[in-house]
Length: 163
Image 1 (cartoon, rainbow, N blue to C red):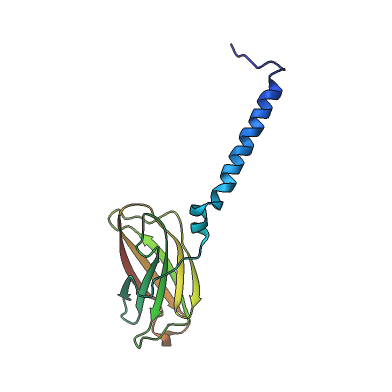
Image 2: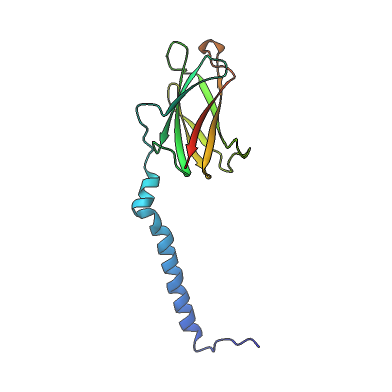
């Protein structure tokens, strides 16, 4: 048998539901105002020295990887990639795609990073969602507008160990 509250208790239930809804909304909206939420909104910062430098498959590019946080963690990360030609100059007409890949399990992530050019020869990919402990590859594919800069249709792979 289903019992329903009497009409005299309905206003009380509505009032309590309203208070609960207001408290829940405050908790959700206020969650971004604390220290943890503020850290997520802050722009990433990168060390001046690269975490790792790799050579592209053609040998024509050097790719320096810098992470934010400086030592990548399980969860969301950001990577800055600096592309240099054989003479050490920035490759300025470059576009890149970045794919996080876990070779031991042969899978990537469901979150696709957005790649943004921030300076000549420099791109930032975020978020890199490295959700499992183990070795992750950062697979980078490049394309340049002109072959003279030495980076047309090239690729590089950086690695990082997540604890």
